[in-house]
Length: 337
Image (cartoon, rainbow, N blue to C red; front, side, top):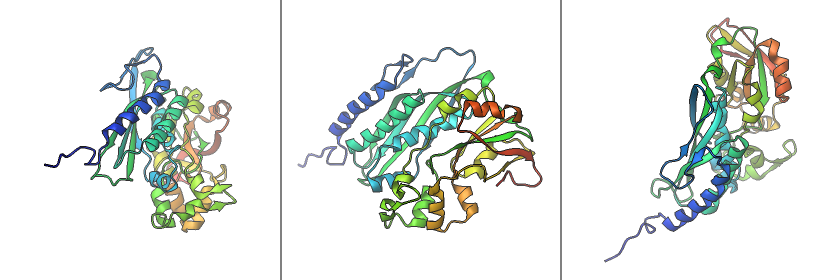
């Protein structure tokens, strides 16, 4: 009789145990005294203190098909940063401080070095955001995923004092829009990039250098999603609303923090659009309107504040610049570019 094993079915339990030990070594330095139990238990525990009326704020996200570009280039070091920062930026728009982060990694075949690279990026981003990498799951699922397939998702929990939650309902016509630069595409629009450049059939354009980029196309596309927590934290008490510019660009994300009756009017001449967008627009023959509908076009975060506090906000976050204003709506548009 043939004796079947889990490994013959595609699941390497010895490799999984080895990875768990590596994860513990990577994640533990992100823990403060609030983390109880540490890595390895069935559930992670975090002791919350110092708040009168704490509100927990949570979010989940992935990095989309940027993973396929990382796989094509064999470079996974920044993908973990992307995952954490995409999640953290989503909760800070409420005025929240990130507390802890969990990851979920699914693979067809466990490659320890790849998982370690992903976790290393996550730990780096968590330390920068003062956030504990508190736990997660690495799942081997042969049959559901091909051997070289990989997917991951992240989950963040933060906290904000109830009295300090940013309130977009206070936004009024005459308020100022401040923009914070992005590092590039961040984690959105990669399906369009892959489609217009035919990267699934021929990834060679990723390795071509472009003088205007100062690096290869692939290197520019893999620049990590910026984290805005430390930069914007001093602004929480003086601004009205923040919009994280992710999929859908300015057109879809800014209206999420605008009350009825007003629209955001941007002056696109007031900020520098990273050259990667011009390269992609030319190489892929993408129309301007589509570029602004898909990509962040150089603004990773948009802040709404009273005009009288704009200079104060810029002094606290020197990368911020005035990029537009809130005006009364005259038609069904929510954003004017």
